[in-house]
Image 1: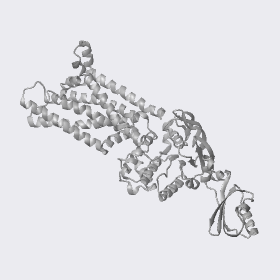
Image 2: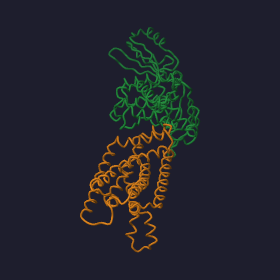
Image 3: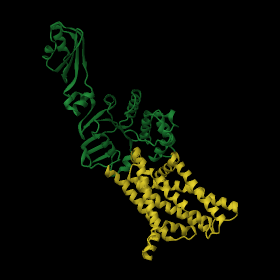
Image 4: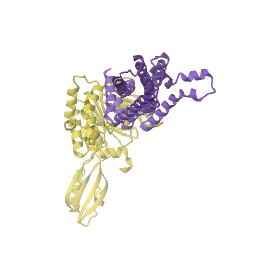
Length: 311
Length: 251
């Protein structure tokens, strides 16, 4: 559905993205992650034909975004970052206008506008002036707009930015449902969202692709996959000293809670060391009240790939 | 065609959704109303060689209001879209650049023409009260309004060009005001420079909006200004289109 080859964009000589190559297949929900300024918005703007690349090619639904821009745009629903809207218009009026602009047949405009209002929960504000709407509602107007012409592909630039947790949950549900019929490329900072909704993830950093895989594979690949927490009374033992001898443990951080010691262990990926810890504890007669494995999250992957010094 | 019509109707409606339209209309009605009142009361006091309609379209009031409305009408056209970022959803919809440029130009033109509708009433009221026509012939009306249309197209295209150059409406307004005022005064230079040859004076006279309005409002339809203003409008709109397209490469 999306095909990107050697895509490069420079602003006044400074590269914003360099040699991007990726493909998004039909029906996929692709998450697009990266720190601020990594080139996410630039890539999305090129895909939406808002600006041309410096070099390389990109195509949407089989149409080149530069040479067959009009057809490409007709097959794509794009929601820009911060959702700029005409603040003087009313919601229904705006959606009617956008539907006509996107070539929805005039007999179907009313039906489509009704459908997207229903889908995005805009019924109660349909007669309001957009300028008076809250951020969450504006976001939904933008999403409704992107859906109007039933595009094969949706490109959403930070669809949940500035929303409260309830709204984020609603939008996430909406995106999940949309993913059943549409191909979606979405960028976001909220990593749990990606884990829950996306079938594949691209992590981009300083204009280059650092990783492109399913969330599960990404989690498996990173060096340090989560950790183990142990809370125990260790008596006269130091605790940390004995624990570091277990193979697979990278380092130990110790905290105290009265008589109890809390050990945060960082471990190598792919090994379960809880059994070894249990054996050590029985051997040394430690009293254990907690032994848990914390699963690695996409956040760990993200930090490891885009900020290696922190790890 | 439907895309163009959709864009155009939004442009026209957007004038009436913002307070600017009403402020401009009130200002314009006030000035033209005063203009008309002055001309009629002036003629009540002495004998003159011209008609009410001619005086109305050639007074200082008229030109003052005339030069001032174009920046007010056009400043927001592109600058506001750039500023609010609405250019992004607009240009990622399947629309062509020329459709956007022309819809903005014609949208402004429609609003400009709406501004002039009440002035037709002035002449109708004059006829009803005095039982005399305000002009010698219907040709004088046609001539005046034709010249309004031609000058309007040219000056609105200049406003479009200055608005596409910046994302700041005030800057757009100031540049277009300066450009329109300078163009307007080129025609007056012939009265200032006394030591130039009559050929130079004639040449400058070709660009004089005041002179064109003078002849057209007497009902004399001269093809030279028609060609001048139509061709200049096309040139300036082409420039606007080029600048608008170039934004992609400047980003």
